[in-house]
Image (cartoon, rainbow, N blue to C red; front, side, top):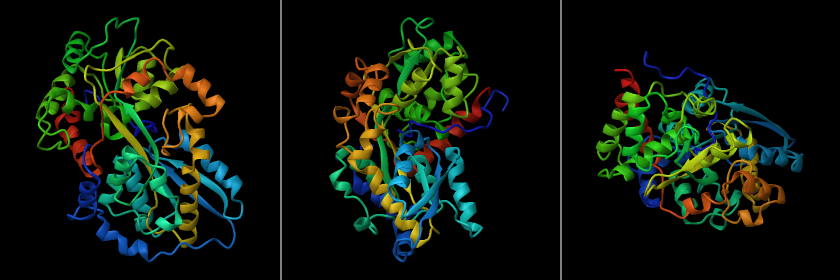
Length: 412
């Protein structure tokens, strides 16, 4: 999903400059000494008992993944429907790599003003490594919606990645897909090898945004071990030899790795680039808002595995008992079917609640899906192979390796 990426305003890097089981993930996060493991935080979170506020309170939401593009209307409706609990919500945004640092600075300064963090496995992993989050499950299971009733196998796998430190609030099979300018690219590449050959013949006309701050960038990166036949697609350190070699070679024909998906999308829409990787939300949004031409072509590689994506609702350490009470009520509210069905259409085609489907979407959403949801393409693409992303710790590892072996070598 982390498919809905908020832009980072920094400069791009230039030439000058899950097929794992829930048990395995929980062991990784909570057992074997992993940073931010469950054993290190469960006791502190269990000491905090949610208390209903005596009067309405205000909370602050920090979004590092563009999640509010989907869920902000639900948050706002919660405020309207619960005036006895909440007086308002302050919304803040940060680039994904900056979220953990911002929360940590608040906690170290003794002013933990952030009530909720929204983000994908990348933000979760960074927050866990610094032990910044409360473990909300199973500690507060009785205070929340029954997740077993709203999650199927795929959603449960994504929920398991959080190790209890986050609640899945956005879920989709996001990509990667290959977006092309049909006026320039008459035959889209069907394999990574064909993409490499095209990039050689058209230097500077293909790129992808830095994976640490881009849903399409990380989806593209995580799909390559499957496409290239690497030894272990779940182990970027020991199992991605072909992937790292391929990305290093591809980098010889890339001028810049944009610092965000937003910059990438702008460059593609303006004609600076002719091929980019993308995901469902960005394809739909950019054609709908006019950033891309309506006839932008979309394709997939042969035997392309699509990477599932999701965003989490996370509660930082240091919140008050009253804030925790409101947080738990809020996440339960937005996961109810009546609310989740409202998220379909403008940006995504699936919801965090398995019971919210296109079939029971609103009339307005159905019209948007028909117009912008590529009904002749996406259903067929989604019928293919899907894989879970790297777990949060491995994803952080992949970002570090990419920077060393690929990003820092640009122009070298």
